Image (tube, rainbow over all chains, first blue to last red; front, side, top):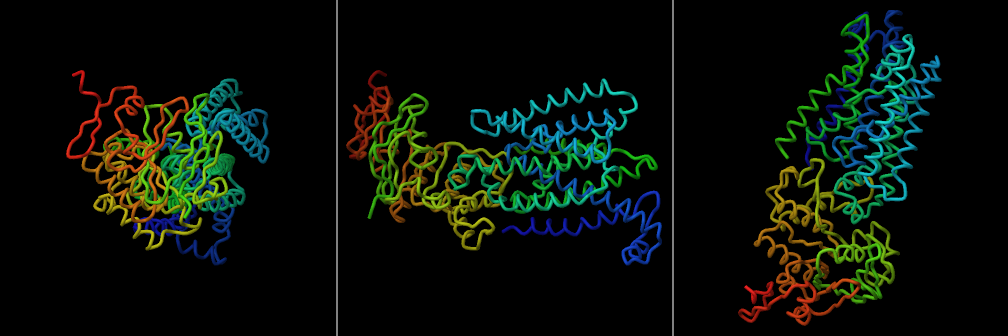
Length: 326
Length: 260
């Protein structure tokens, strides 16, 4: 077996805590390594300890979880649809969540009710796409993709409509939510649990994913129950996306570019691609969110802006590259 | 010993079109079968049915005496393998990674490929003449190389029954003959059997022991290649006059030259 993918996995395992340390130490109050260790040992300054444990740590963990969820869902969606352009949002899950959340914001709801509406919207969209794509016909990647894309553009139209009729006072928070924002992410445990369960579940079918990329017929011939596998991937990926969307709105590009970055590094085997995607996606989102906090401090940028600004050039570079190596 | 494959009173149809009716035949170890017929007559559908990828309308298929419906999917995949008409690669993977996919049915769900699996894959790559390309990315291969990689993947799977859909697609003359020799020798040596769709009558007459002809509308005939391949049957089969040319005691079949 080639050794390089394992070395990359190891590097990513070491890199993730580094990014978390970076996120915990920078900001309007800078905390150096010495102070940081003091806080970890419980002997630090009370202000430092409060900033780390109550402000920066929950946010950094939420960012890591969210990035991991999106990257994992991206790998799964690309395998499900056998399409390198697929991302976690392509089947309209974030659109459904966004519509529900925007309505909730307009109604003046907040806190848990916002999260609840996002969950409801995501589940509604997931069920809608699933039942429409199922229809009477067979459940092919193309049919699923078309259904999802059409439903997603339907949500897009409703989102524009809501923004057009929204009262001025709500518009700012609605736009922030749409661009993806981690500043309200306070509870990270549900995200971490679903990331763990999702990763474990997808690792159990990871070699089947390799086989599925060879096409439905070949997968069937090699003993894979293609219909059942597709259903599992659809539900795992959708639930991961729904969780990510409820934590931080729709943060773009992580789910699309992380799988491709790893493939460019030579990681094609899903048994390594899945854990690497979680680590790289989490790490990059922690860094992007930290940048979003400090670039125009004391004001904050929505993290979705940063990921898109990083994502667009990287993605164009990838497209350029793949057109040269067909 | 019971035959590797028995089709019993098999009826297969696509929508309201009949591919075969009450078809009965058996494939023994070491044999090579050719399926001949015009485009759209249902050759691929029949091949997929024989391999258990879709159910027949009527009739039974048994492998070594056991009904294929009773064989679990993973065990079935250890017993029979496919070379499909086309393969496409939306994502990058190395040649080695692709060929190792053939080991999938032999591994448990958490198991990684062992040194033995990698030896099997390397041997298959060598047989397909791809050893030098093991680290190449599949999307950079030529059509013929990709075809040989699909063959190597099938060899790595080590089935007893090979179902091949136009195996010589994309291959040049030399590689066509090499692939046919490799497969037929493997069938003889390892007591395996081949069932393949062919469009080249001369490859069929040279390598196949038995042929199965699909005339359309459910009409079929099976029998030894030497008996069935005649000007008359082939003319009826292809709806075009076929002429036999004899050379060095061998028969060659070509589209009729008489009107030229």
